[in-house]
Every structure is written in C-alpha cells, then in structure tokens.
Image (cartoon, rainbow, N blue to C red; front, side):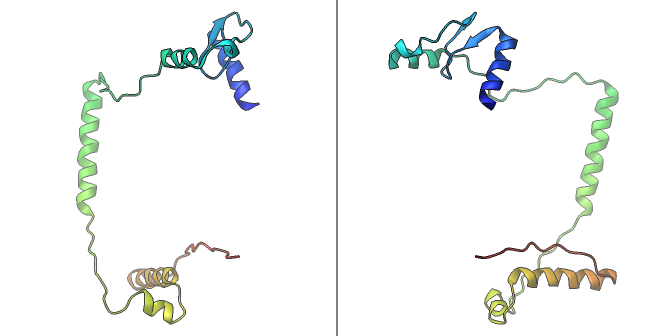
Length: 137
C-alpha cells in the first residue's frame, strides 16, 4: 500500500504512468503489456532506464570574502580546541578480566565503577550514571 501511494504520487508529478517496477512507462497510462515481453526485452528495458548520477563530484561554491574569513577563523578555533586536548593511556597489568569474573563481578560494571571513582577523586562529587540492563532468557 505504501509503495503504491508513492508511485501514484510520482505519476501525478511526471504525468507518466508506471506499469511495473522494471521501468516500463507510457504517457496517458494504458494497460501494462509487460507479460507479453520476453526476458531479453525486459533486460534491455531495465538497462535503458536512466540511472541517477551517483559519482562524487567537486562542488564549486561562490563565497564572499566575509564568509571566507569566517571559515578561516572557525578553522583556527577548531585547531586550537584540538591542540588543547591531551590524552594519556595507562595499561594496567596487575589483573584482568579473569580476575574480575572469578570474583563475581561484571567487567563492564567494574570499569563503570572505576570511572565513577576517578571522577569522585578529581571533582569531589558523584554524578548520575547509566548502565544498560540486559535480560537473559
């Protein structure tokens, strides 16, 4: 029903009546003759259909100097914001997943509590967290 509604809407715009999904159409909308066509003719009709252009192509934009200056300013601010971030990674080798599981804990919950503990240590307060729940049958 939904596809039929879209096809009817497209027909009101183009003025052509589409008889099948393989691209056979006619102006005015007579009965479909797709049942009389051979497979070879249908393949040829599908091949002859105009396909939309999907290859990427360069967009040429005509920007005034004010917009170009704003873009340069935004690039500079983005670069500054990126350079302000600093990340360090510590690989902890004291124990791993097996130790956590053997002690009856979920590795995900353990990591969540570690993050909560670190946040509390840094900012002195606890925040709400979200832990997804999974029901097992």
